[in-house]
Length: 577
Ligand code: PEP
Ligand code: MG
Image (cartoon, rainbow, N blue to C red; front, side, top):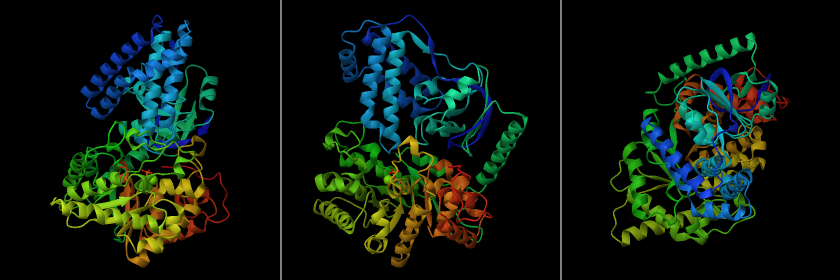
């Protein structure tokens, strides 16, 4: 039986199913604090093991989880919920409920880092609950494909190296922790597979799973023909990856030499090395939220300056785009005193924060300018969530004021800054001509642009398959943006996930986008895809895509250029990167 889902990590795998489920373990331990202390000790051990295995970033997650396990708020809240309970299962349920409540404000956040933290909190609650109720998770004993509703990070990390061949999730999204982990382990993952769990249970205990992490499908109990297809797809993938890797030293360009700069998105200075190794021609998006979240006070200007300088130094003459803080009322950043909002995605977020907290953003602009003192490239500063001409005027005012502050204090700074904006709100695309005259560059945030153009919450699992950035409505907004930029003579980049989708990249180049910024792991594939087509072919492809009526029609078109665009209906090819 073949079930469709959303492709979340590329590759193909076949193997026995391992189900993520709880069974009977040791004796129950109904004392919440004792159970939490044991959970913390287990997580500290896990962090140590993962660190020894050469995965320091994951180790840091589990160290943070060990602290969460003994967080006084979690423990006191759990004790309040469990005050009159004696049954270990009921006490365990109380702890899980408290952890779920604590995770709630973090969960609906379009930010990998923070959304992952919500999973971390629930994961910690689940671990304490298992100790209380005397339950455990039996880990696989042979190389297997994990099937789960959602797979908590600490469980995934406990699976010994080599025993996890792939991940199939009933829920989850391409940005869920398990998907991110799968990409970093280099194993395939398919998420949002409706009906997966029930279908797997109906198949009985010994079940073979075939996973296509490129096409986004899961095959339960594959027959000979399906196995042969999966094997052939796996071999094709390995061969294509090797061929793509061989192009690493070449700058991005189409087959006829039209230049397309291929840059990396990074989320912290430590990501720079991986991006450079993958052949990034610069940084098209440095998300700076890592400096602001998960702490009780704002980062100092000096701390910020060091972080930005580290990235500028690492990239030397190559461009680096540093984005101003992109946070709103959906993110718990206590020292910003953000009011809870009914619709935080439409609220006081991103650049708009400057209305209430101008000093916060002034400080960040100053830090970027200071980091640029002595740098070999002009720092590029970018504002998120720009919707109006007034927003750009606000941004320009911030930059002027910050530079004047530094000059008045005699503080060394970059001689100049390039000032750009993200085009990720439909009004910015519609006002592209007006905005382009006032800034040095555009970078299209296709993740948010898709959510706002289609009015589909990007974090909603129900829209994982339909909120497709290749929708013709989104492409038409991108075309408007490119036209506005071309008239003003500025460059247009795309730094949303669409840029790292080889099919998306082809359409974007055809639309006139000249810079693509993506996770470093996607650079090889995109470089190879762009190098295989001429500019004229991609322009024709983009024109056909613009004329299409549905996202499925666009995908069918880019997968098989012979397919007519207009009139095709949903239900065609739906593989997503
Ligand atoms: C986007 O919206 O496409 C984008 C790149 O920014 P983020 O994903 O951080 O919102
Ligand atoms: Mg965005």
